[in-house]
Every structure is written in structure tokens, then in C-alpha cells.
Length: 301
Image (tube, rainbow, N blue to C red; front, top):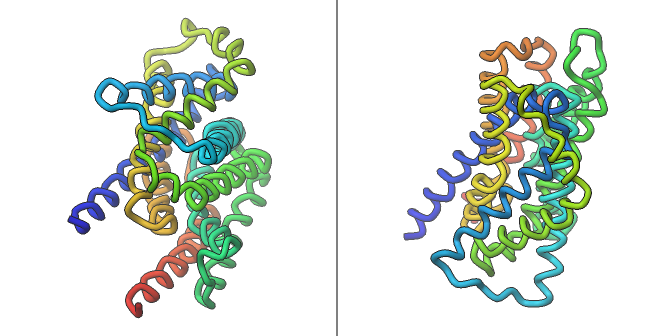
């Protein structure tokens, strides 16, 4: 039974990371050109909040303890508002390839937070992996202002790294709540809360979206990023956090740049630069060293 749960959790992680990978090129088509980042965040949160209410058709509402409500509200502000706003504004100002590679630093950030919180003890291999991963990430961010990276920017890449930091904080901080309550309960509180907070600030930008300017391709891409990537992948992520550790969960972010780069190049949105490949390999090696250290520790226990 435990093995089956582990398999389901890992399949869920693969699926949600593939969905998130599709975000990068599709957002690149839409953001800042047809839909503002603020409008995108507001509309996607409203849709996610509506989806989060659907399970109430077949399940009774679960009571959340008063002292847990503040934590869930904090998670709503982190994941629902801060992460999405940073991601949207970041992708509006940088390339989908850079954004997807920078997002793979989440396992490194999870490690830093876990060590800081006293959950993990850091090893020499993890230190080396951490330094390599962060060096590769900083190289991508710094070179984003060079002449041959026309579609990237330092500002956009910095926002993507902030978004990755928020994702890491969410994985470490909220795991206990996800284990305590149903996944649908946690997401209902998160998305309804964040949608209510965001609505007064973003409703005007949503109402001014001009659908008549969109081609069929742009309209389909807009509908995809509004409907699919917010509620469904987070449902899968939160389900997996009940079974696997945050670091294992974050490792699957490796999938995102591979899928995102393939789609981006296939759509002709951006060429793949040699220095980007080099820096991506450095990031992957760093993250790989951190992951291997966890496997060795698990085998010796």
C-alpha cells in the first residue's frame, strides 16, 4: 500500500511539472502583449478558487483549527499572491528558457530552508552542490543583460528566483498542514483567500482585457494558462507532499526546463544559446549532487 502511494505521488509530481513547463512558452506568448501580469494573476486565482469549491459537491467541509488558519492565510499570500505575481512579472520580462532553468534551483532553496529550520543537516556534498547550483543560476541571471540575450533581462530573472524561493518556503513550511488536512481543504482556503485579497487590486485589469485582439492561437494559450496550471498542478503537488519529502518533491523541477526548452524552440520563440546550455549543466550537476547525498543518506539508515 505504501509503495502504491509512493508511485502515485511520483506520477503526480511528473504530471504537475510537465504542466508547469508548458506555462513558460505559453505565458511568453500572452503576458504583457495581450494580458497584463496583474490581470493574469487575478483571473487565474478567481478560476482556481471556483475549482477549489467543486469538491464540496461530494465531500463535507473540513473544520480547520483556528491556529492553523493564520498559517494557511500566510501560505495563500506566499503561494497565491507573491509567487504568482513574481512569476508573471518575471516571465513578462525574460525568456521562457531562462525562467525554466532558474526554477530548477528550488531543491537547493528547499535545502537551505530545511537546514535553517533545523529539519536537515547539511553534508560536504550538499555544500559543493549548493555552490555549483547557485553559481550556475547567478551566471544565467548576470548574462541576461548581454547583447545576444535579447529576450532576457536581469529584472525578470531576479523575479523568477524570488518566485522559486517562495515555492521552496511553501514546500518546507506547509508540509505538516498538508498531512493534517485534506489537500482539497488546504487548497480551498489558499485560493479563496488569495482571490479575495487580489480581487480589489486586479479586477479592473481583468475587465479591460481585449479578447478581440487575440488570434485563435493566442486565445487558446490564454485559456490554457488561466485554467490549467494553477489549481490542478497544485492539487497534485500537495497530494505528493503527503507522501514524499519536500526535497524529493522539488527534484522533479528538473523536468520543467527540458520540456519548456523543447516547446520554446519548436514554437520558434527563442534560440538556445551555448552559454545557457553550459550554465544549465552547472545548475543540474549542483542539484544532482544534493539529490545524490539524500539517496546515500537514505541507504545508510
